[in-house]
Length: 384
Image (cartoon, rainbow, N blue to C red; front, side, top):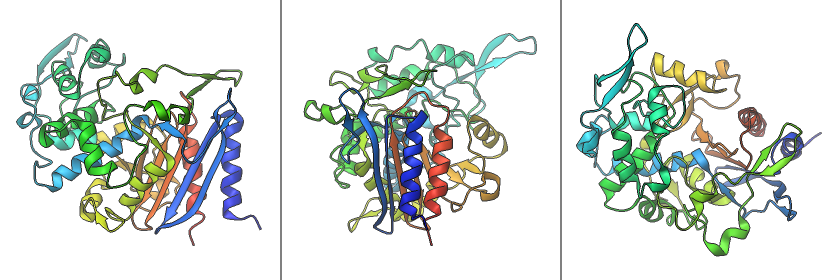
C-alpha cells in the first residue's frame, strides 16, 4: 500500500515536469510534522537544490502577514472595523468614484459612503492595482513606485485617484493591503517593517523573513523563473529591484521574502489559535473573525469570478472555505489562507490545528491554483 508521504512525494515531483524548477511543502498538525519535502532546484544553472533554508519571494502571501499585523492593533482597541479610513488617513476624506454614463461617457462624483477599515481588509475599498480594465487601473499604472519613498506617501498618491466603485459594493484585488500597511504605520508610530519585526517576526523566530535581502543571504534565494511555450525555464528578473537595499517602499501587499520554516511558524501560530511556544500573539476569537466570510452577494460573485475559488468566500485578507460541496473540497469549513503570484501558498485549519505551506518560484503560471487544490486534497487525505 502506498504511504501518504509517497503520495505527496509523487505529486510534488509531477509538478516539476511542466512547472517550477523546484518546490517545497510543509504540513504540520497539532505540533507534529506530518510531511516535509524538497524537490528540484533553487537555481538550475548552479544546480543548487531546494533546501530547508531556501528563501522565496512571497508576493501576495505577504498580505496574510499584513492583515494579521493590523489585527494586533485591532485587539489593542486602536480602531474599529467600521471606522472611516479618513479618521486615520485624512487624504481619504472626500474620495471620488469613476462612473460611466448611459452614453459611455466617463465622469467622477463623490463616493456614496467612505472607505471603512474593513473595506481594506476585504478588498472592497474601490482601490485597484495597475492595469487597463478601467480608468482607475489606468491612472494607477501611471504611478512610478520607485519614486515613492514610503507607504504613507503611496497612500496619499492613491487617494488622489478616483475609486473604481463605491466602497463596500464590489470586490476587487488591489492596493488595499498596502494602504492597510500605511494605517499600521500611523497607528503604531513605527515603520511597517519595524512593526512586523517587533510584533511578529521576532516573537516567532522568523529570522529569514524581511523586505530586503541581506548580502550574506543572497546565495540562499531561489531563482524566479518564467516558462516559455517550449517549456524552457528562463530567469525572471522583473521584480528583483524590490528586494535590493536601496528600495524604499515596504509593500504590505507583496513585498516580503521568507523561508518554508519561517512562514510555517507563522501559519502554525494561526492554526493554534494565536499561540506560539507559550506566548499568545493573537486572540483565538480574532482569528475566527479573520476566517469568516465577509462578502455578500455582489462582492462574493466578483471574488468567485477571479480564479478557481469555488466554495470559498473571503475574510480579512484570506480565502475562507464556506461550501465544501460547491468547491469539491475535502478540507474543513473554515479552512483559510492565500497564495502568491510566483506559486507560494498556505492553508490553515484551526479545527484540525493544521497548517500547510507550499513554495515554488514560477511566474506567470495558469496552473498554480490547480496544483494548490491537488496539494490540499492529498494533505487532507492524510488525516485520520
